[in-house]
Amino acid sequence: MKQRYIEIPDTWQDLTPDDWREVLKIRQKVVDNGGRYSELDIKTETARVLLKNRGVKLQLNNPNYVQLVGQVAALLGWLWQAEGTVVSLVYKDTRNLLPKVRQWIGPADHGQDLTFGEFRQAFVHLKAYEQTQTVTPLHALAGLLYRPCDGRSRRLPYDDDSIDEKIARGQQMQPWQVWGIYAWFAYFCEYLTTGTFIIDGCEVCFAPLFAHGSHGSTSASGGSPAGNSLQQICLTLAESHVFGTARDVDNTPLLTVMQKLLMDYETLQKIKRTKK
Image (cartoon, rainbow, N blue to C red; front, side, top):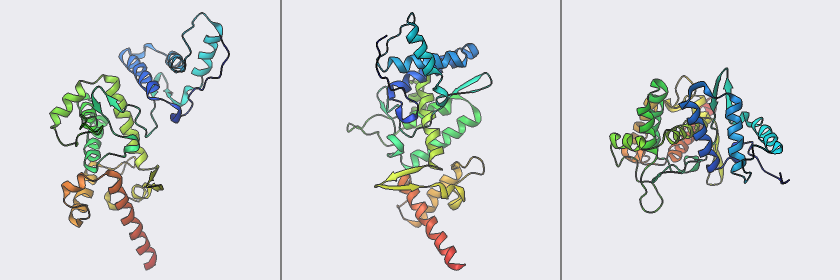
């Protein structure tokens, strides 16, 4: 085996869209076959895929190749996590590594083009799936976030079609694609409550909103924004006419709404400190 330097991903930032699609297919194979695959099987197949995507061909009769696969597999604890006999695929990146599914366009990296209403509706589908573990909310979530292009490489507005049309769109996707969409959005929701965004060149963190429950925008469990609270935010902002009507609020970029809430929160905290 020819000696050369190969960069193997060991963080999410190193993972490519090609890597992610292949790993999602491996996960689907594991799901479809129940407990047939061990943690070693899964990580070994993943290692082969990552090597293949970096130009290393399958060479099962080459001891050096087999050793390399084993070394890479041993480093994949950040991607696959095991609890007992259950091995789960992890996703922790706000980049959308599935930017397009079939002819449909998905959200931009870091949720840059999500509107408040789109996020609010998607969050409802997310929670419905997590509570029921049924596939219909997953199809609705996928069909909501992935929409036809408007001819300028942008998605059509999120409310242009009915819930039935969204579900039908999700049903036309492969199961691994649907789960990949769910994994990205679930992590984006988590990151929204804890992480730092770069907006207009400045670092912005919305964590204070969720840590202190300001504006009624958090749930009691897990620190994620609750569907009813998001509806209340929409109505409150509509009443203040900052962005216009409730429909205008829904059509406002999510991060713009979050910045407004953060600004109001910080103003309120300054007032409270002044009164002490």
